[in-house]
Length: 204
Ligand code: SAM
Image (cartoon, rainbow, N blue to C red; front, side, top):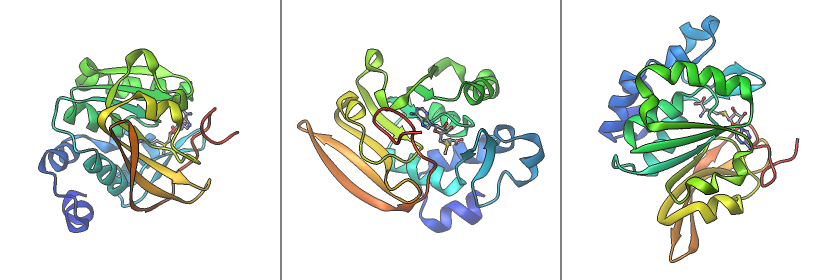
């Protein structure tokens, strides 16, 4: 996966590549899909949701520019695979999922080696987690019609947010920075995520 799918497409952050080499992606998918877990595509994880394609996980994580000390907010725990990578590369992680059954599965898989620096939340992640703010980094792994205002408010000064923004089934992957309180956006490429459902996202 690392040699065939990530390095040739410009993922060059060695800490990230080592984490993706180490973390057993097959544990984060339903058992019947384990043989396909390193393929170059997203896979169904139940409840109509997906574990993202390995390259997308890598691209989003690389775009966060993590040094190892940051407090990160992740919206859309899903399988917990992205969470495991964030736990390796950042100081602490708060992850939010709106579907309880997915959060519980992710919590179980992450239980062993990764739990010391992760806190799990159930609920509408478009509201962020104000009592834990500010966050140095925010990653949203579902598609939003716009950058949710509470998330931008909870981003620290000079912080970075990576988020897919656009239509329900087709979006631009954005890197958003907070500079002197203002929003600066950069388009990293096109993408297709499941919708972010919530007060500041899409409606069900
Ligand atoms: N990063 C995940 C992984 O590696 O498995 C993929 C996440 S999946 C593409 C998007 C997730 O966002 C789904 O699990 C979905 O239930 C969740 N989601 C959608 N809207 C949400 C919201 N408002 N708050 C929290 N989670 C949300």
